[in-house]
Length: 327
Length: 114
Image 1: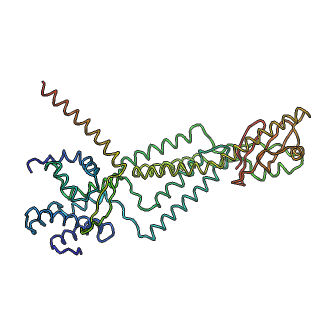
Image 2: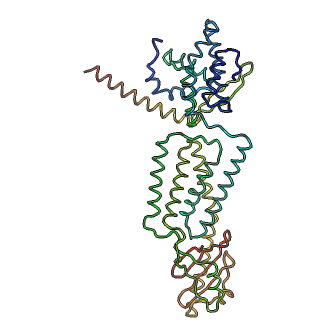
Image 3: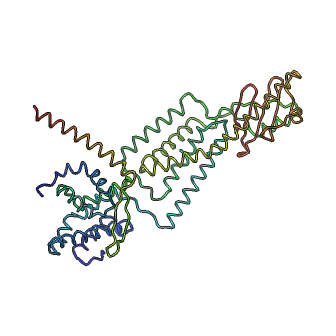
């Protein structure tokens, strides 16, 4: 019940409150604003010479029917923020969710040599939508047509781009056990990138990821402009931060591989064959990286290095097939 | 009022008018109405009932921001100020309005000559 000295104003405010869905923080704020402006309007009319009762009548008439006013307000009213503890809980949950998916994106980034495509789809597809949905108080720009058209366009485009001319997302895969075996068994052969038995990501997985990525992009697009800018810049900055250490690792490994290549070529010119593992261990002075694994067979050699940031994955160089990543 | 603009004309430029009026300083709801009435020479006949949904829509777009202020000796009021994005939107809407105005003016002149 509105606590207002003027009975007609109290009746109007009560009706407006119930039309807005009953007592609550959001309706309380609307009522406080309407009441304050109503009193300013009455004061102005009275100052202009109108009688107080007539001034109230006119000011209330200007506001119109409370039901109609509430219906017009309900659409554009910003969403109500939850209580303080819920606000913090949801922010924490959003940060943890985003962080968890950032870790998954890191793992995905380490699987392949120089591949940022998968990271983007895992991060934007799996991470962004739940993070945005959990974050409290995000004001959506309510335009269903705009959102739907974008969503459909992005899903179709994403699915098309991901499926065009590709049969697998992971082209080279060699398990850690295979790496160990190849290096420990006597007469070890050079490590070579191999086709996986089964592709890690099937088309339907990729299409689902693309659809989720589209959902993430759409959720960003329906934000207020300033909010969208923060989300896009934040996500791009985080992607860059996630990617940078892996790119640096790959650059260091590439320089090391070139140095090993020069050393092996030199040894081959002298002896007529690629140097052995024992020669590598005894003679090669690493430039930048330690724990390099060198292996050879009669006509090829390879270099392997377990990533420092993601020990279960690694990068390799094969004298015939170039650089590759190992999941 | 006799010199009030037709409501459909005002509806078409309501967002531009509100954004423009908030450029010099923040204002509260009723102050916006009285200022519009003064500046528009009685032409803008916004009622409070139509003002709030418009203000909330602009707030939702991120073009204006609301803040409760309590001036000394006066009652607590919800004031609105234009944001940076709001200024950008105002410029875009003003440019559109001028284009429309020029096109209509050109049509009128042509009709006047004919």
